Length: 219
Length: 157
Image: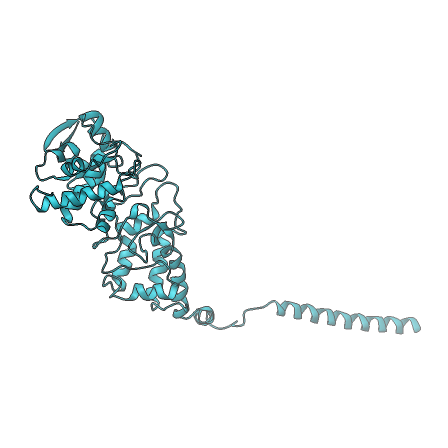
């Protein structure tokens, strides 16, 4: 009799433990279900999720400009957008030797015109003149200075049609996408540093900046 | 064979299109007034006129010169309106003389575009022509004198 009671008590205890174990396992399984929108139609789920992570256009626009700025301020671009009337040269952007001057049309002065030394193509060898058929600085009446400008100030310059050669957004995109001399930045002469991204990437950032509202960076 | 027009004369030159113009002028055509200096467009000794502009012939390829007017120091000497060499002789500008043909070719472009240059204009035009003898003060004086001769029809004194 005592044995029978002990067995009954043991079976009851076993059943309680089994019930507790089953409950614990179910809780763990449920806790791994992270889809908060279970049961919601899939299109709605996507829309809500995207809204959750998307940044405002102003943020996207400014971030894109800051990427493009890395190219604009690189010596391959900035050297021909100096704050003075003398071009810069080299990876340290020192003032061009030989007292080279901008001239009225940006193509140099007298016997010191750009194309007197800069050929239609790069001249092979270290320290040889880089080349392009249309080598020049911006003209004296539209200097398009990059040198020394922080992102906000450079963005303002690029957008100001009185400073940028009367270019609207489309013309600006056309210029950075197709202009041959802009393209020369991606074809440096021997020994000169390369730009930090491809032209396609640069144009993508530049276009995003404009398409998302041409917002000015904070500083 | 490449056709080049040098000093008003047509030459058939046995040169590849990627030969530097200086080589064609000196070694093939035989006009040796133009000098080789640095070979990298940094000294100006090889300056010639290509369609009137003072190009550095050591880095200018023959292909760029085809169909254009090339003038060397020999061609400039034959120009009766050129007073530069007269002024250069008047003031005994050269010392060793090696750079002087390049100096004169550059000065000719300056006087064509600015018949009455200031010292600053001269510096702007001539800074790409290096003279190891340091004849710069005499070059500057000679350019002023040539400009005066040019304005007064040859009588610069």
